[in-house]
Length: 276
Ligand SMILES: [Zn+2]
Image (cartoon, rainbow, N blue to C red; front, side, top):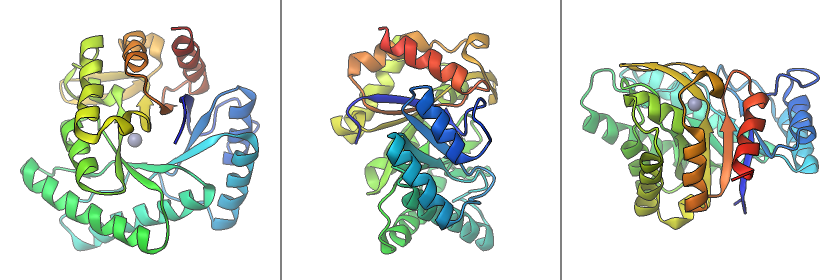
């Protein structure tokens, strides 16, 4: 649990000594940022010894860590082997994240594959319950953060993510405000931002607002949703209004910036938020 809102990068900052996670954490501390998400989006390729080292550095420098699980996860996969592989990727990410002392792991739950959304929900919920049980049976306590996704073809609307979080112990939301905006071109005003936060409080309780995991960047989108991430200044993301809503609801937790400029936009966000 965090007593305020911390800002950090999705992955190692560009201005780090090297691309390594350890150097990334050092750079986060130098920049006086608060957290970093370790990106395992193309595979969880860190071993336990390195995870221990990374965890020690983060602890010493007081940088909070989270992890992002691989993109290749589909809890609605039709083939059994793809489903098993998806769950294995989540479990392996949880093991490494736990050793690093990370608070949670973010993942994109599934694709609809043209199946009816209510059937997909039921399947994802069952597979996720199984996965959480497997993780807990190893004594691992990290939170699984289901992310709101940026395309209509991807499972992960706000409603779906909040419902999974309400119904499965150990699952909580990762609210990607850029994705929510890109999904339908809406969700980009104070009123809509406040409505999102109110839905979180209504469905998960006030405690969820004290333990937020947020993704934010500028975003390019079409009628089909997300196209690519942009820097804030090149996008229409109304982040000042978003921050006003965050202040109004007094939210706490971690904000991970996924703009191409990484630490550039993270510093802009942190400064803008703190000056309100
Ligand atoms: Zn993501």
